[in-house]
Image 1: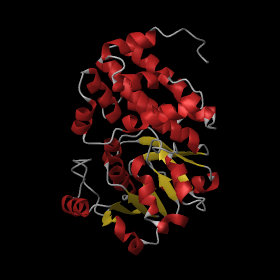
Image 2: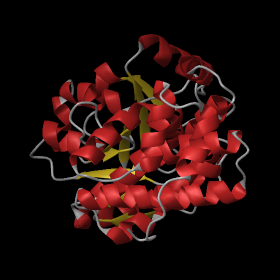
Image 3: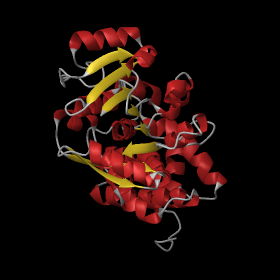
Length: 329
């Protein structure tokens, strides 16, 4: 299969490393200097250092995409905020199968990544999400993982899964991209809260409770948007939530840990050097939740903390003093 990957961040680079071992793969970047540096170093020193590119992996500029065509699959791994702009400049993708490896809700519209693609290319019937519990560093290293390919076009999804699946990255397919998309977005918010809880030394009991109740929030929101409840126990949702809330490689968890130290958010993000989607996603999550009358106390508490409405020392006590309720409610 001939694959084009757009987005040279950590995840895009890891996917390029992985797929180039078995497929004709090209990693595209918009920036001329980035392309030059990637060619020269044969690794992504900025976002994924110490993981050399396979000899077969090609590097090119996004502006040259016409000359690379035709190709069989495009994987877009840019931040969610950049998806629409990227697509708008690429009419060549109107009939090309597209997998989104971005997570979050688009600012202003509240659309999930696959929905953004559909809004730009309404006639493209081969659009899906590639999402699950995967750290870029571990995939680039060749460690085993499992991930979900979710699409409304289940027949195409099954065919694509058969081609892409291998013994390093096992791919499961489902037909609920709304559920998987909401899971991929909201888990980043819960991961910031989980990191904060750990940084406050609230304990393992508190972390387990937070993850479990975070899943409940995620499920309520997804269900209100039409997702299937079974999806919320899968790789792209619960699996991703567990990894992001507990793994030390999680950028969102790191943000929470540093918030617990009393550091300024902007300084934290500058030190991180990567996009922490949980911070960008939080306002959209709450807007959508309020619009659909979905209760999300963990997300609300995080927003209050970030806005200065509540102090770090009061967060845990405030959550624990909420009115008791039936667990499934």
